[in-house]
Image 1 (tube, rainbow, N blue to C red):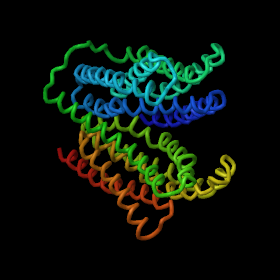
Image 2: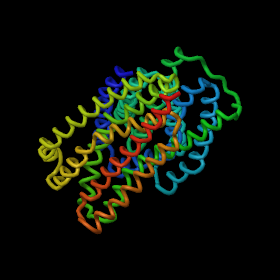
Image 3: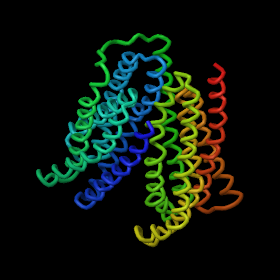
Length: 412
């Protein structure tokens, strides 16, 4: 798992480079209006398919606890059918007629099917803990979208949003085919049948819904910052966050925080189901070491070089972003540790506790902002301080919840 974790960081870095290359190439070849509509459509599809992503953690934990992949996968298949039909019925017409995406109706339908199929296989390989395939997909997906975009644009001379949607559809189908071919040797095919909704199945469904809301709450936390800055500060200050701070912060999350949920959570669910206390302790020590090294390096590099780096890469009007990033760098260690604690809590099956911690973070962010804004300072940094304080509070609360679960596990 540790080997896959570290290689996952390298693969994610390469994936970011490929993804960024696609965006730069598309920005230079496709007109701004078409590109904006495409990314807006993909964002809407992603948000509506969020429930499928939220199932991943509950599938991993349920499989470790029950070993009943037939029940888990067939329930998940049923949910996918319902979600795809709902998106087809409501989201596709909305994009076509309200947002004004100028592309044939069936391109949008194919996009829904392709993205859903890709998410289905991604959840399956996560459930079976096929780490090497997970890493391969992380790199393959942006490579295929870049490749298919170039083929559609240069070889077939397509323009507008058409080459963009073709690239998305073909890359998602390509990833699904790759995962299917690579993973079928590791587990037997699960036949399609109606699952029995016993106590275990109901618990799995309940945890899946809670996990989806918890996952969405983490996204809402970051977008609350955007909302507060949009409402209380100028467009220049919002631009510092949207153009510079949020992308860099998001890349740090992708590189060093998301791998904890991708690799450590499945391992924890296995160790907890086996009640392997020593291995859990060893994994926690390794995460602590990892958190101190990564956050320490990030803090030093930010304090020493962030102003020069922003000055080189961005126009001078974005200089204010450096102060935002310095505040985030000081608290980045709490993000990593909180990610591990939330992963441990979810791996133990306490999905509701994980959700309540996330919701607490949103409440702390909003309340802290208004206290600072109205009683101390009306600087845009008040939003960033509120964000990092919310992560700090979540770290404190999740620490005690994790400790309580660990002690109860130890007592068994």
